[in-house]
Image 1 (tube, rainbow, N blue to C red):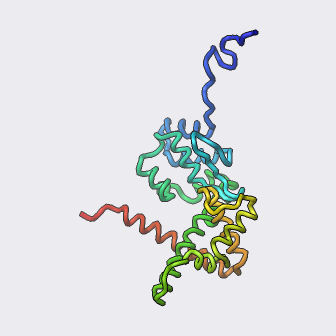
Image 2: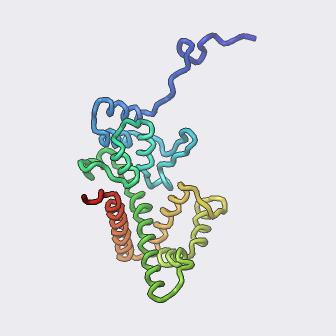
Image 3: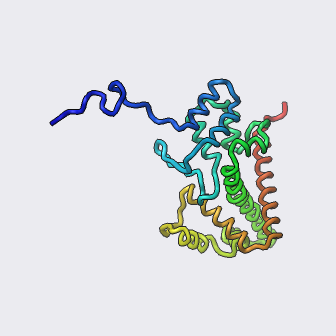
Length: 240
């Protein structure tokens, strides 16, 4: 039978170089040129084109419910691909606490991402990050109320769910699975969990009047700020 010529499907008999996404190439080139790593990273985020991908043994889903952009997950992917971008402390502050260098202003961040990604980022921030903080704040409120009344803390998760979303956790999860076409299950992947929180955010807003929604948002933002301040305090060096 006929045999393929040497180098068929390759250049000079060599395998073609693996594809490097343009955003990763941009980040690597910018860092090699000595540009600030955070600038280069945000530009790479703005250039990124796919909403999900599989890389190595991991699946990355950057867009939640087709609306909420998890830009820090993408930043993690980009920084793994270009490990020379940024110092260790700066990378950790970003990936663990969402903190960019101080010179990066909100307008700088918004311009780098572009209007579409920035809107989707806000959906993620308010719909998932702040929603989780609100859940923690209400959990603390319920726990304190029960402590004052001498009640046990069993079932506190359902008490939080009832207060915020009007149903038990199990019932809410069943509705979420049914509405999103998922198989019936109680354990969620990290991506599914984020989508569930985003779905809960929409349920809460739909059943609340605007003043209650605004109050809950303020409560979630304060809880998030308190949490970040507590983290910063734990990381601060002890006085000499």
